[in-house]
Length: 237
Image 1 (tube, rainbow, N blue to C red):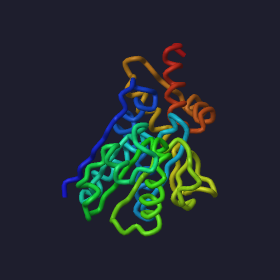
Image 2 (cartoon, helix red, strand yellow):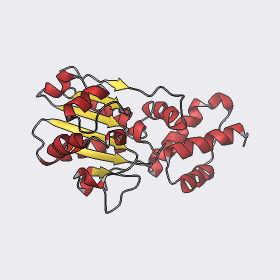
Image 3 (cartoon, helix red, strand yellow):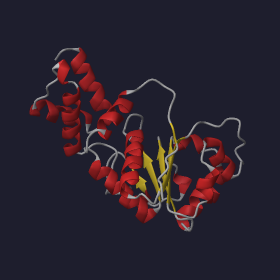
Image 4 (tube, rainbow, N blue to C red):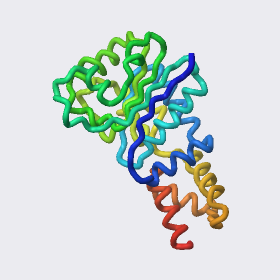
């Protein structure tokens, strides 16, 4: 089956995190993380990925689309950046919510393997029928051959998800230890190498000591890392 991806992107200027998406997609730096996320996704069906702005959520969502498209061609993919829906009543049926954000009807009606990726899922927090009748049902029953990735700026304790269904910035006892948003050292090192290669004409060179310092300073925060590297380039350090 042809894998389809519906991707509604943000109408905004590129941020450091968005620029880093391209760099990550051009390298294999986050291969381990995205592979682990897809493995956990298939095990637990509904996964919530939470983190602050520029922590790598949208990057990981894009990489997940790319990874599943390559490795699971029978899986139909629908990837949506959720807008706020002030015109929609909070008591709206969950199908109305999904249709309003752009999920195609044929995707919901399909019986084949599917992956629904909802970025900025916190924008749907007011629609309790969506969480109670759709997300909770898929979490507890999982009868629709459907995996759901919820990328959100914060966690909602009423979402009925177990610790293994929650991915955060760092592996902790309260979330899934197999995946995290922040970069591991190997990922950090490879992404910096990719950035340096992309800016070879600007003579951007980082020593091993500088890479280690940046990792200790940012703790692997993707957006913070790129911002610092960009500031160093502008300052001609």
